[in-house]
Image (cartoon, rainbow, N blue to C red; front, side, top):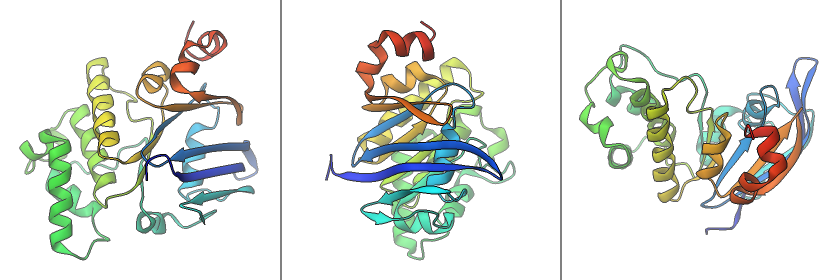
Amino acid sequence: MAGDPLLRVEGIVSGYGKKEILRGVTLGVDCGETVCLIGPNGAGKSTVLLTIFGYLKPRAGRVTFKDRDITGIEPHRMLGLGVGFCPQRRNIFPDMTVREHLDLAAWTMADAKRKRESRERIYRMFPVLRERERQKAQTMSGGQRQMLTLGMALMTGPSLILLDEPTVGLAPMIVESVFESLDCIHAEGVSVLIVEQNAAKALAHSQRAYVLDIGQNRHQGESTRLAADPQVRRMYLGG
C-alpha cells in the first residue's frame, strides 16, 4: 500500500576494490513514492544504486526490500523480486527494433499473455514507442532511446525502479520529456529512486530527497523543503 516501507538502506559502506566510496549511507523509499538522490560529482550517488542492485557487494550495512534482507544479492535475482534498474549507460542495441528490445527485457517472463500485456502497458505510458515499434534504435532520438530504456526497465512490472542519471547528455527540451515520463511512472504506482545531476529538476519531480556528499548523508527531507533550504540551494543548486 502507498506509504508502506519498500526499500531500506542502512549504514552501507561500499566501493571499488580497496577504494571506499560510501561511508555509512542510509536512505529509504516507500511504496508509491519517488525519491531523488542528489549531490556533487563523486559523492557516491551511482555507487548507492549499484550496491542496492547487487553489482557491488557492501562491506558493511544492510539493504532490505519488502522487509527481506537482499544485501549483496545477485543482480539477476533482483528482477524476480520486483526491482528494475535503468543504468546511466543505456542498454540499447543499434540494430534492434523497439519491439525486440522490449521482448529482450522480458526474458524472465515465460507467460506470453503476460508479456503482451506488459508491452501494451509500456506503449500506453510511452506512445512514441508504439509508433516506432518496428524502428531500429539507431534511428531514434536521444530522448526516444531514453524512453525505450525506461520501458525496458518496466517490462517485468517492478514495484521499484532505480534510475541512474536518466537525463545525462540530453538536450534541455528532451530533459523535460524524460521528467514527464518519470511522472507517468509515478502515476502508475511504481516507486522510484532516481540519481540525478539536475538537482533542481529532480527535487521538483519527487516527494523526498537525500543529499550525499563525500559518500555520506548530508541532508534529507521533503523535496520542497530541501529545494527552499538556503544552505542546500547555495551548496548544491547553484544559489
